Structures are given as C-alpha cells and as structure tokens.
Length: 453
Image: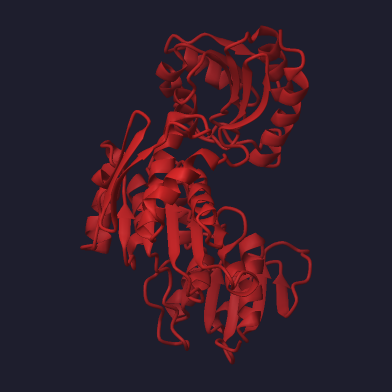
C-alpha cells in the first residue's frame, strides 16, 4: 500500500493511538516521524522517534500532522504548524480516511463504551465480523491493516478524538483525507466532564457534534430534555447544519420495551431478558439495536441477541454472587453523573462504595439516588464526599481505602441486597486507572463473597 508515498507524516504523542497511527502511516508508504515529550520510548518499526521537547521545525516540515487524543489542539507547536499551513488532524480522522467498511460511531459523556460494545455484539450475533474499537479497546488506526476483513466498524468516539476533526484537509497534501464518515451515529448524553480541556459546556457540545459533520444516515441524539440535550441540539444546528435525520424521538424506552422509529427501521423490542443490570442499560441496548437495525440487521435477529448481551468489564459488571448478594463493579463511573445513573439502576438496596480522586464538587447530587442505600466513602475524596452528602441528609460510613470499604460492606450486607462500586471519582489517588481499581475490587469482592452471612 502506497497511498501516502512521498508524504512526510509527523505523529504527535506516541501512546496507544499515536503508535497505531504511526504504524498505519508506515503501512501506507509515508515517511513517519513520531514525537513525544517523554525521554524514552520503545522503538516503533519504520518510525523515526524524536523524544523530549518538540522541535518546531519538525512539525513545520511535515506534509501532515496526526495528533493523539491526549494532546490538545491548543498545543503551541500544533497552532504554529496549522498557521504555517500544515494540515493537522486527529488520529481518529486519519484512521477513518482509510476505512471502507460501514462505520457506526457512538459518543456521549456516559454509556458510550457499553453501547459500542452492545452494537458490536449484536452485529456479531447476526453473523457479521465487526471491528470494535476507537476510544474503547484497539485504536481505530489498527483496523485498516490488522482487521481488513471486518465488514463493519463500530467506534467509540471521545470528545478529545473529535476535537481536531477539521472537515476537509488543507490542499497541501495528496490525497486529501475524507475523514470520519459514519453511516449511523449516536450522541447519547452530555453532562459536565473534561471541562479542563474544552473550557465550557458549549465547546464540549461542539466537539461532540462534530461526529455528525459527514453523517450519511441515522443520527440519534438525547430524547430527554435538560441542558445537555439542548446544548447538543444547539451545536448541531449552529455548527453542522441540516442533517438527513436528527431525532431524539427516534428511540424511547418504556419499562422493558423499546420503541424505535428511524428512517431505516420502525419496530418494538422486548428488553426484559437483558441480563446487564441497570435501567440505563435498557436505553443503551435500545440505541444499540436502533443503530444495528439502521445498518440492515433484521429485527428478529436483534431480538434473539438481546438476552446474550454481556456487560463490559468495570461497567455494571456482576463479579460475584453468593447467598442472593450481588457484587457489582462499576469502576468506570468516574464522575458524579455516571455514578448517579449506576446507582439508580440497582433494583435492590445496596452498599454503594464512593471515592477516589474528586473531579470537583457536586456529590450532593447523588442524594436522591442514595435515599434507600448505604453510602460507604473511601479514598482521597472520602472526607469531601461525606461532607457534601451529609449536607443533603445522607449519612455515610467513612473508611480509608477501597479494601476497608469492601470489608465494611461484606460484614453488613444481607441476602437480597448488593454491594456496588460506583465511585463517582477518578482512580488516580490509589490506582493506575479505573480498570486497575475495578480489578482490585473484583478480587476483593470474590474473596469476600464467601464470607457473606
């Protein structure tokens, strides 16, 4: 493959997505330079690494700059390169430009990983060979070379990945990159998060709305009201323009039944046999079914696949069950709204473990969701959470570590109840990431489950 023969590509940020983008550029015949502020990194075949402080002349000498999601568009060297006329795109846009298979894309503050996984599972259950990745799992840049046999691409998309979707690339390079062209897409919701990067909720909404810029089919947006939905609608109207279809009314859930009405499909779906806990996962499954149906999957096949859907690790994942006590790992709930949704989805009284590294105030918003539960707070944010919850009338049990929280819950929980880790915080006070925290909880839960009385 020599699509980029003679093109000098500079990849900024050589973590997971950057390495994948650099490898794709090599496979396409480009001359590739990878730059990263870190002083030491493993070699990447075919890539010349420049480590440490960026050399601006390297970026100015590029024909194309591909940026990893962790690097903000406001980075001064990127701004200078763009002003100089160098095309600057995100890794997602770069990868999507080399994908011919139909693309289904999902974004949102919460629920996007689960919905992406559900779409992939529904397609696979119906005989397709989907590649599932993006912000979830494998970087999208791995697909064109390593998964070229996939007949669908299902991508979780973050606002960071969409930030540099600049539309049509500058004409300095050949070929132009067509960018992200979803056949179907969904923006699930929008709640405060990542504001240190985006600055305002309006700019956060604008980043999410870029997912619809070159949408060719069904676009699903929040059906509910509230400022998040209104901001998305405003961003789509003001920054994207008329679409073939934008409709929150296209998918709704009443009880355990989903009602889907989109241009390619109109049907009802029974979700009563969905095994993944949480009322919000009924909505995730309904949106996933709508996206799969819009891609041509028969409704009967979707209905048959619903009971087979499984949760992703660390997302309302039942990790232990003993004497009618459920232990549920929702470590991915790293903000207050995600925890609120998880807690509200529990249909039994639970000991809810909250704590970690706070992203800000606002834990009092969990008060109504915790009304029939017991809150056990731990970690760096434990004192703050306790103060904010007590201010809204929620008593807490305060401990130091996650291990202590599990021990307290194990000694108090009774049959018919649950222990739910839904921390509402980042994990970096004690763990490398939310997955590490979830694995520790899972091990503790499975050990404690045998001690439940």
